[in-house]
Image (cartoon, rainbow, N blue to C red; front, side, top):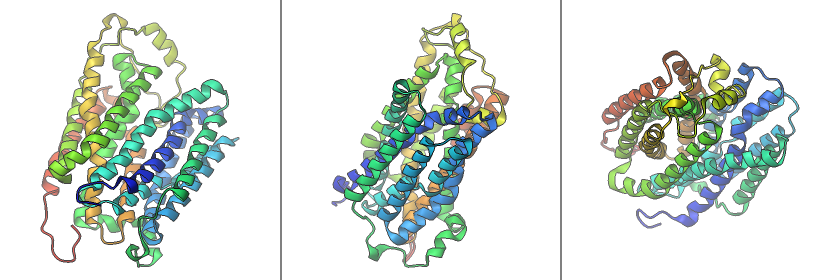
Length: 446
């Protein structure tokens, strides 16, 4: 690998298996509440189904990441992918709500696919290419979110059984196993593996050790804080655009496709060039600034439904909608539908423009923070650090819908995004103080 040039021959298999893994996951994600509702689940139980995976990841991902430092990336990738495949088969054959929850717990405990793939990326990149490499895994994630939901909807059109999309997800997961077996070459040779005892991987799931490291704990807190705000945005976006723009299911899907295209462009085309030009610290500052700008603009979206909106039809569809994860735990979130006498293009145009800086920031922030974390990681603990980072993201994903939903319900549709924008500004100012370059002494991680 030449300086500042990404070795695509090494990275593309990781990109491919990440894409296939995410594709399997995103076939299932939009339908989880339907699986739960099929068995007469209460709103709280639907929320439990949604929360089972991220809560299990809090335990599983740091451990799996640390074990990948000890035994190599390929064995742990295979364990993760096999367990994910098994969880989809469990979901396809589920005949009770308990089986559905168990399938999500199995995937959460042992499915550390993305964190392990990111660790593999760091093995085959240097400081000049690491952010770009990590950005490619983000691009794979974005592509998965473009195609997975569409495959799920199509599968339900041709089959009335909820087992069909679960079996499709299992097939994609099996394909990722084959990719890992035959196309992925081990990126962590034995001489670079952690020599310490395996039991260290289980020391409070590695998180306490990481939080005690001064420069690393700042990065973990930034990762957690921005993810709480951003995932609250994601989980409430459908409710927001319904209340402001009158967009229902198909409209929401088109919005996510629009976001996906921007995300893929940022991570495939911009992030590498910007990292070489500005460096990881400035990328973090740019990301937090654009996230703050996008959220504040989004909160000011005019209350103007799109030109084809009909309030009476929207109200009829709304009565049939299943509760979201946020509604499942905190209760029904009341939605005031926009008046169809105010129809126009201005609200939609403002909203789509606000999504551009928001999505640019989302595409930059996690690769840049993870790259900085890897620089602070002691030799042989890259997987452990990225595992803890992924666990903090999972914890944020479990908290964000509930916190954001409560704010939405209590203070109105704009409040979660306006408050989120202010929080991003606070994180930006904190990062300007905390992420200053530090002198490096011999034997210390950077």
